Image (cartoon, rainbow, N blue to C red; front, top):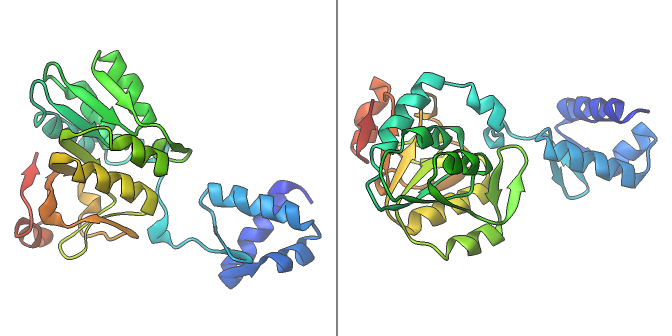
Length: 248
């Protein structure tokens, strides 16, 4: 059986059962245990399943995160508006942290402040910053293939070498009760640490994120200003009670 055929069979079985055991896949697919383990590792890296002890499970959609390419083409006009507003918050001589993500990436062409230093965990951000001749530092650590974000313990240790006037963070969920959330707990750690090391924090979110809750909490709404294109009316009162909203 070809690799892609095994992958299809594994995913089909997961959709039928929710959870599959490693030994079950070995028996059904007629492949070695080491081959099936490699298959599960690869499928997990594609975010098509989650490995668990002795097998695999379907990934909860709330824990899925779109890739950089997919996110680039979502809500483009809103992201440009949000990015322009966020860039205006940067003042001359400041040291700022730019989170990985397409909305923070879109800020870079709009940065007009002079003598700015930027620290980022976004691989895509560095080229844009260098092209604009902005002094920049890229955190070291493990690179997430899917989102091109540097995460992990090395990145956290790296970050402790810096202090920021401001940080600009992306989020996948903005909820009045649950605060700001993101699908990946490891990426949440990086965002939370940047917030802790910053004099002021901003969270950038288009309207599709308002009212959403994903797996890992960053912090409460009142701990950062929200920069967005427009808050839907039915959420505005609840969110405005908790945080300052900067709208386009």
